[in-house]
Length: 162
Length: 162
Length: 162
Image (cartoon, rainbow over all chains, first blue to last red; front, side, top):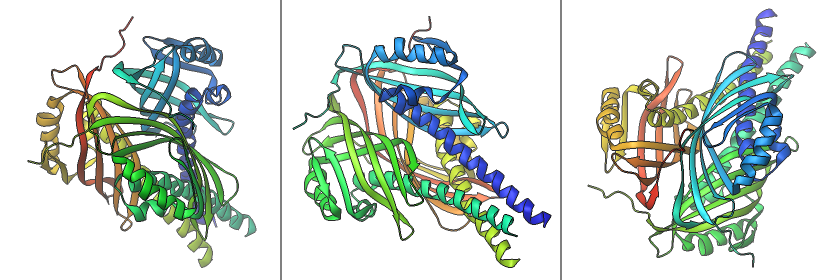
């Protein structure tokens, strides 16, 4: 019997990696959904209490869930009239059953507060993820912004509702 | 034996969720491939017969596979000279073994009919998915367009074939 | 016992497809990370020795790992001051346990050598993947570039470090 149990256990462990990867990917997606759709609860749900969010210039480093919330509410949401992130190229490497690193790239189109002109931002996120009590969340996200520029003369406007 | 069977059954159910997620993700990808590469069969294969495709302004609501096909062939493909969707941030939540909701974001670059100027579109798709006879398809897709604008002076041109 | 073993084997085979899909997806992501972050080892690690990389106009066809490396180091990296690919819409179809086809779409923002102006590129990658000695790599990548154009007046600049 032990060989069979071992087979089942082996499958369960491999499946756990697959499910963990999906959960980690959802965190990166919900960062975009929470931020762009201004869903505070969703955005805050992806971070551990002791998370670090290092956005770098021009925004800064934010520590703890309270710091993340303050960055969101007092710095970032006020800075953006609207934003639209697309996250891709997500690669995860596990450092253990409950620890992982991930890297992904993001494009963001948006408008800064009070402006109609379109801004384009490109960045890379380097993440530490941790599982606690069966739940994966972000422990640290380092943001490297590659460019942050307007598209001269381009505006962002939704189609008129008829 | 029952505990072991239960292990295997449990693994099979968890694996079914993983495989279903992949199938659902493929639907969102094939929406882009079918639409942009003008592959009618591929595009129509992702919808159930009783699907609803609510694109909102400026395009409208389309019902049933016949409605989807009509929208595609008489409204959307004629409106676009070319289009290039990128779908990302795909998050799925299961409402049962055979029902799921999903949300994803899309950027689209393209040219409208008869134009050379580049248009940029950003949208969010909110989907209902259903599995029937072991196959997942879209039951309803609601499109929220965030912006739909030209980039003044930018054209879309493929490199010359040498 | 045989039915149970068969159950376990069946699960193992299904899980192998899921794990293979993740490995194949990582290849497409690491193409972007390796290319854009100028990580030669990472970029070269995704190709088999006998790979073909057909980029088409204006770049050409490159054969073998040596050809891929030459294209990278003498043609592409010198041509780009910086580049930022986003890969999405990744759909995989298996032709056997160790052979797969995949298609994905990519947007790239960047600057050509010596320029400050932003270039936008949109392309589709059609891939052959093969597993050898338990490892998946790209055997052939065909690139179809849909557009490759500047955004007049738009520059790419990283935020100033304070």
